[in-house]
Length: 382
Ligand SMILES: Cc1cc2nc3c(=O)[nH]c(=O)nc-3n(C[C@H](O)[C@H](O)[C@H](O)COP(=O)(O)OP(=O)(O)OC[C@H]3O[C@@H](n4cnc5c(N)ncnc54)[C@H](O)[C@@H]3O)c2cc1C
Image 1 (cartoon, rainbow, N blue to C red):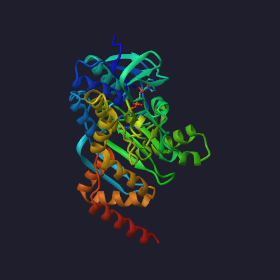
Image 2: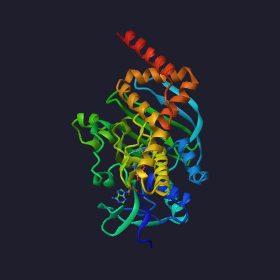
Image 3: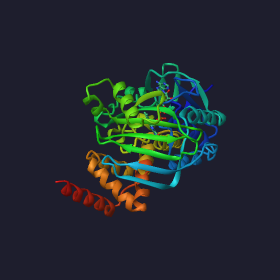
Image 4: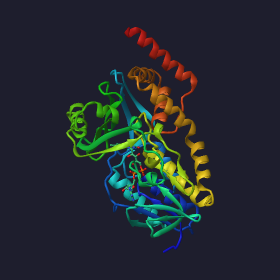
């Protein structure tokens, strides 16, 4: 047991496991402690969709085959709020892997690499002479706060919570679905927009199904959250009755805080790194966790500066793009125009997938084409 841990990670989701795995990968002699309040395997409310970019991150972490026994999903259908549908083969397939399996595999891989994994709920953090003291019992040179949407580490750092207008809430469940069904469906909703339902086949005769919306829109209904979310899911996917329903908040990236203070770095949902257009967060969790782990072992004297620089290089332009698009997307007509453009131009479909599930940005020419179509439709409606 180390007297001073080189890296102490709070949270064993994708962000925390990635941080721990990367730290050990770059410095096998580093002492790395991973704390989670739960034992693994544990469930996590999620659509279980893992984008191709997430798999790239797994390869960088030295785990290229972690999901090899799950069927890749090639087809994606998206229905816009106004009912425009596009169905296409994605340039690179996605995977759907229950978090009960995915997260446990990541934690196990970290353990196998020499990370010490302990069940422990973190409650306090104190900076002390170039070190961080955790719960008055553990000391570390660098702490990575990867403790999810309701991050305690973020609160203890005094960072502001994600504003309600940039927070979504979603419920997910599991439903039976013929094994042959292999297309992912995202059905956006005009009622209560921005809101959408999804059905993501897993490939084992079941699918992850769910429904999510922005928190202020849910509150505006004046009805209990559970009643609204469960009711809308039943109504939108009547042929797929869901069990094991579970809901959680999604802190969206336009509400992101500074990614840490001094020797404490925030990664994944704790840093509000969820795509505001799609609710995708696993790729950003793996990426930011990896970069936090890197900074912790390669720049232990000033990890925050290194982390901010690397995060900005990896995601800066993408986050600025989605900040703007999330504002434009408040108008369902904008999304209708974008999906209608994607239905006619396969390269636009691929680009929307890059922006929604990866680190893509939008070239000015395409933004102009979508805005032109949006304006033309608005005039047509009038
Ligand atoms: C309903 C729903 C559907 C979604 N669908 C998708 C999808 O299909 N694809 C996608 O990419 N993203 C999806 N997301 C987002 C995705 O789930 C998150 O972005 C992702 O889980 C973030 O990973 P993380 O490691 O940052 O946090 P988490 O996965 O939440 O892990 C945080 C960990 O920290 C632990 N922890 C918390 N507090 C403490 C503490 N005080 N001490 C110790 N440990 C603690 C928790 O037990 C947990 O294990 C969805 C989210 C929701 C709610």
